[in-house]
Image (cartoon, rainbow, N blue to C red; front, side, top):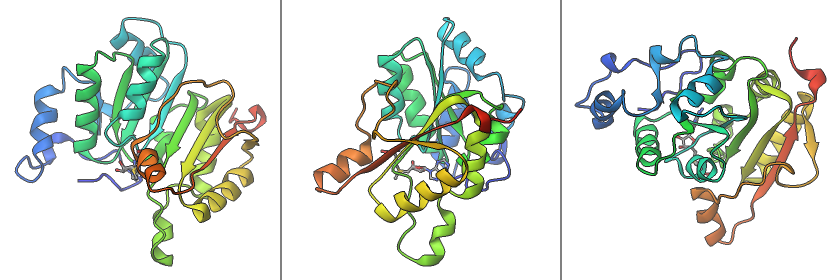
Length: 239
Ligand SMILES: C[S@@+](CC[C@H](N)C(=O)[O-])C[C@H]1O[C@@H](n2cnc3c(N)ncnc32)[C@H](O)[C@@H]1O
């Protein structure tokens, strides 16, 4: 059951029917064991994530990164294994994907990551100003079949404005897609919000490697991949 509504955190588990979605029971059973955050567990979190994940990892962590649309967790798990001194958060809108991600990370012993069930359109309700060092958005649903579906795209002028708030000065936003038209539209919204495009396709100071699940799929089909990085100019960060 996707949590698509942008203006609330999503339902608490007590209000979800385990008969309809088997992952309700799985998450309930493992809520103490797995770092899954949803519903009321998201309240009061802005500004605390670094400390929260450092406590989980039993290690003071340096930078905080977020992937919006983390699917089954591959990229966040790859990154958190390569950089155990940083904190990583995967966010998605389905219980199943969040549960599978948290379970996989736990089995692999990745203690420096956490998983949020929420809609990426409410970034400012989940993170404090300048809390994030980087945000990844890899292969978001392109909503391109019909003109009226475009309103569902996550990159909008409002979303870009939220990015300028939650990214720290010089923090980056990394966007990859196979949809050229979405890439061009996203580019114009990101530039208009005051984010500064970088010429290279990958962030120059972020050297971790991962091929996302959809990236692999599209590459095997011989499709072109459009990738761009934008930096938060410190002048655009909220006071
Ligand atoms: C096409 S998949 C890409 C997954 C992964 N990033 C990759 O590259 O392999 C898009 C993912 O975004 C999630 N998603 C869609 N809308 C979202 C939103 N508004 N906020 C957070 N996640 C969202 C979907 O549930 C899905 O897991």
